[in-house]
Image (cartoon, rainbow, N blue to C red; front, side, top):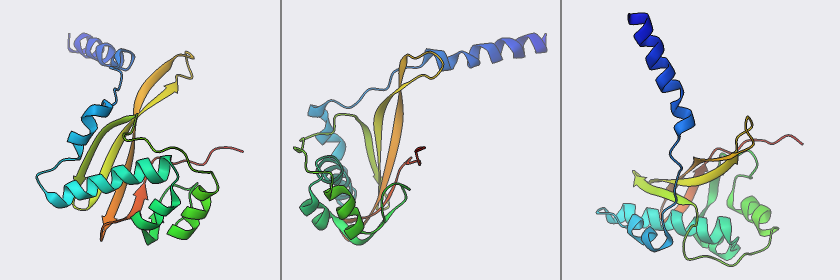
Length: 160
């Protein structure tokens, strides 16, 4: 009987991957509320990371990068150089985009102990079915003296 129950539970839980709840982004008009915090330092850190994402990483405003990044910026994505100057050279070569007042795929943003974590919606193709599914991508920033000092994400090296 215990083996039957164990097999039934295994079957039930193994199908949970096929019953995924789609990830949804925060609507643009609700994102400002996510930047608020009872701790003024954490609110400022969230605002800095949020604006860094919008202005520097998306719009590629390198004047904003100079203002918002620590000179000794540390990058953990293997595709992006470490240091503010190499970062600016890399992203500055891509050309500016029009900045948005929100982040279209933002799922959440939290701050704790000078670190800001942002979650993003990602839509990918299921390699087994060809259909698309949603998942979540995370980026984390360390804030030091009012500047972005370090960044982590799920960057991987793609095959050539």
